[in-house]
Image (tube, helix red, strand yellow):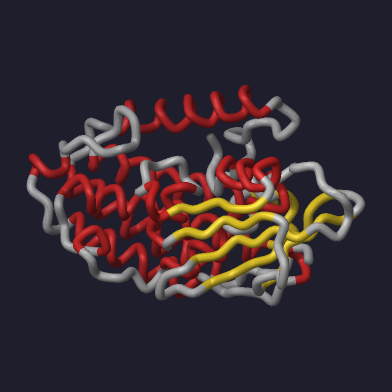
Length: 275
């Protein structure tokens, strides 16, 4: 199955709700908490908020106003693309650190309202592109945007000690995040195998999600559900899954690979972000 064949998932409401969660959290933080370091290398909590403001503004400028001067060429090699994106992100954060925490929160609210107004009229089925998943309709690009905001929110929670999933409470949006990240597998997983070979990817906690990777003549295809007799399998908790798929530290006891090692080990290398 291709992403283009998947029924549209409208994440616009989730994007708005996730932003409100972030704004509510930012509004409770002290200056010391805003300055706290996060797992994002070299970035404080305030820096992550500044980055998310940049993400909003760039999205509006590019998609609403057709301002394309900030785009990095897609034909650049992976290392060059990732380096260019990292440098672009860092330049913005470094330049905007002079803004106060209150200003950043207010600007995030404004940029979010602008983005929501634009997306309200968007055709979710029009073509888009997600670097780590390939060609995709706009709705999936927005789902990817949601995952970025969700992951950064979790980083802010962890850095500030705010209550949330890190203290045991489930996150209502984790299944949506995992259903988005999973599309990194058919695009990135390149293990050699005979046509018809199946591989399982499973979330074995309350999320109870499962997928099948099937080898076709020209690559791997993804479908929902567990294969009857997989040649290899990856089983994870939901918490470990999002961490693994973003390159963050995870509990190794919550991740298990089995079956043919040549098929199983590469499952750990897939990422749902640009690294």
